[in-house]
Amino acid sequence: MLVVLPALAQPVPDPSLPKFPTPPPSVDAQTSIIGPSYADAPEYAVSPAIPQGEVREFILYSEDSKIYPGIVRIENEISAKRDAYGNRLPAPDAQVSKPGRYERHVYVYIPKQVAPGAPFMVVQDGHSYINRMAPVLDSMIAAKRVPAMIIIAPDSGGSDAQGSQRGLEYDTLSDRYSNWVEQELLPAVAQKYGVSFTSDPEGRATMGGSSGAICAWTMAWYHPERYHKVLSYSGTFVNQASPQDPKTPRGGWEYHATLIPKTAKKPIRIWMEVGEKDLHFDDPESTWHNWPLANNRMATVLKKKGYDYRYVFATDARHVDNRVVRQTLPAALEWLWRDYPKKLILCAHQAVRAFHSQTLGASHNGKNAVQ
Image (cartoon, rainbow, N blue to C red):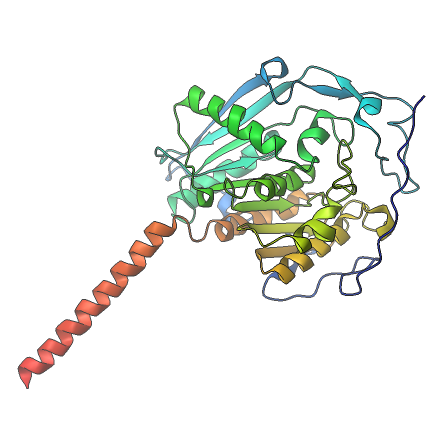
């Protein structure tokens, strides 16, 4: 007999948080509103005068993974159930999924300037981003606006949302995906291409759109000793966990409702964006599935806890809107990496101070000699 989990009780509303219907956030030092017209950032222009990084590709197979051996969704009356707004309803994993094989494509951008112990960024849903990121990174690395970083851009194991391999990887609130990256993905890239990665969390970033974005935050949240930088487009900070966990019953909604407010601030920096007309933008709060509302709430609690964040609300934009990505990605990357590596920046500041000190000292000595 198939059983649907009971509906969760509604929490007492917090009067200090943004409400439905979702208004634009207030503009302040951390929050901006852009649009409704968008244009490609100039960094997308390809210049033959600068070094061009290489994009490589390989495949990982489910049978070789100890962490993700593979599942597929079962299409049945349970997995087909929706609420009144079209959102999937949570159900026990065994009722909506079964073991299944996948092939995972992995894309790797390696800049010409790469060095051992390189900084890097893990980018979920890699096929959607790798070709958009390569020319931008070529330009910005050549201009020394970001470090010579490697991009590791794996696709998910397939499908989407509850009961799927992608849902299991991206929407689960745990350290499982971070462990997969650390124990299986990074070693595979290092072995295939002869590169090595920094262990400094300041030199490790993660990025994604939609469920790939909450996955990026989850990687840093559960292992801040691994990742300090997150870039999020249309983050799925909503009730889409797969499978449902009684410790976090509303999935990603728990980040802004309970986890971040009740946990000591972690050393995570995040640049985040949402579209005005993002997914379920007109759903009531009771669905826990309104993307603009969820991202507004994230910005609110990040501000309250003193996080280093930037929040962009894109007017007339939809879910992971390509126009927005192509306008904002270079500035987002530059803001995220603005002080890396700190040691080199500190040395530069020290050198400048030493220069000024010597100059002033010589000037005073000169005056004394004249007198």
